[in-house]
Image (tube, rainbow, N blue to C red; front, side, top):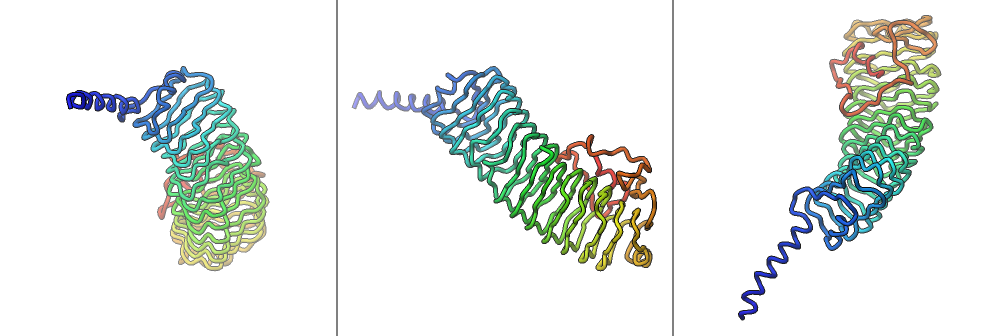
Length: 394
């Protein structure tokens, strides 16, 4: 009995020490591989894990299955590989920034992450995990050639920018996004396939060669396409969106949105020089302004009943303004202008409506266009006006 009397406090103290070794909710700072090795017996690390920028070479997390916090490394320029063979869950962010020598990322059991946030990892070509749950994804300035390893059904924001080797984006499982989806500044022949995306908030796409959104039915916010090289764009099931922008898509010749009924904001089509026919057979309501300019020969909006903002339609092509003229006192509630066979079509703010003309004060080009992010996404709605809409050309 005496032995038990003294042994129990010793065992309790030993357990407390062991628990503390696996974290107590505070930040766990890793300054060397030997620091990481001291946690090999921990299935769970309780707290954020920060890998110091001074760490170099191969980094391996053994034994750990869960990190109850974030896993972060900022500025680890001499880390060449990262491995976590048993890691399944990171409760908070998986944040890597400035790992300019990283060539290998291997976490084969990792499926659940609070956020994926990778920036400035220029020679990493592949993702060695299979994440099926993440609240947001931001991948900026990496050497990735695909997004294989990310298989989400729902996400908040999905930001993929400045990955110049990224050739394909095939996120087959994604059905809904509650914040911005943005692709910009990646490989200029990037092919994007979002076959099951049905709804979301904002979808903005720049500098891609192919985009497939066959299941998209509704966006709460903006749908925008700038400076792309695809010749055809189709959204066969889209019925409603916020602001709708198509600008500087120089090869676009076939545009099909056959069931689009409502644009909750402004609607801009400009500088799409190969687009000869504009037709939206079901479009009934635009709560902002309509602003179409270019070289089209045909413009058909047979179901249009209400444009709460202004109306600007100008083209070098030969089409009739007769129907639109009859709407200017009833259907169209803002400033009205329609001109066919004009040599110098412009948007409502005077910017050139065609890349072959030089009118107005237009200074936007595809080459110097900025990246649209959640921070600078324009906010528009029922009060959208021509001048604001035209500024979407960043």
